[in-house]
Length: 92
Image (cartoon, rainbow, N blue to C red; front, side, top):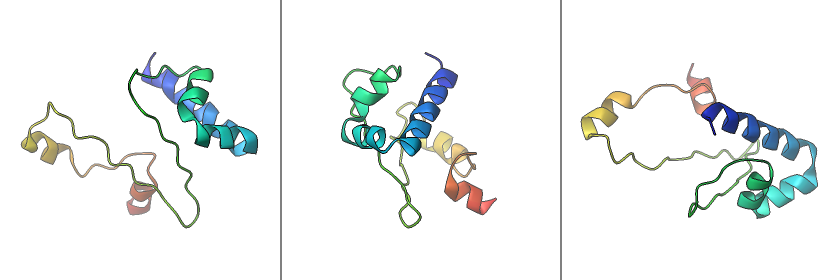
């Protein structure tokens, strides 16, 4: 499954959670089951968590450090702005 297909599915899941409180409750309670049911291919052995942001609580996800990059590579990659993150949008 391509990254674009994954983004489409996750976008659909988010929209559905916004529109349907029951679906949102199930997604928060058992994300892996809901994501699989919605067609997302999940890697075996990986735990999924869904958290809900609010006006007063924002979540910053710290990705796992890539194991194949040197410290110099990481330094070069740091500092870029992403297009979806509220923190980056505020700094633009």
